[in-house]
Length: 181
Image (cartoon, rainbow, N blue to C red):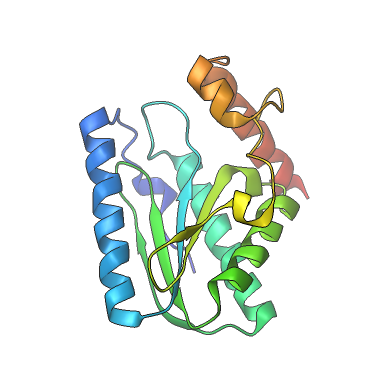
């Protein structure tokens, strides 16, 4: 199943207020899901540098991440209580409700991000039933690395060490290399 269609990508610049509103909406949606399901949530978004968040590439990456999450859950024997994919101009989002301990889910999704050739391009958040987001630090893992130079990604982003074009080019190389396998 295709979670979102790459052919329908908006391919337009997203303003900072739109991006902030989207994040706020995602948090509100997560809280509503937690109130309804009282369980662990997986929230899926893409790492997408630059002002254009909804592209054919970002949607392809989202679909591959969604498929990887489906496979992971099948391998672990986890049933989805509910799920939803939201293709948006600020980037595709997905949410999955699971009746599995959040700590166990986060360990598995961290392993998926680390082992999959495209996992570095995915942002898989895990929220426990109280709404707390489990982080890499909770598992004594270092911050995510930059796609280009392997320094902490947040440091490179803050210093604007690499251009958007460089980062997007690296993402495309990773995507096409993964498709060749």
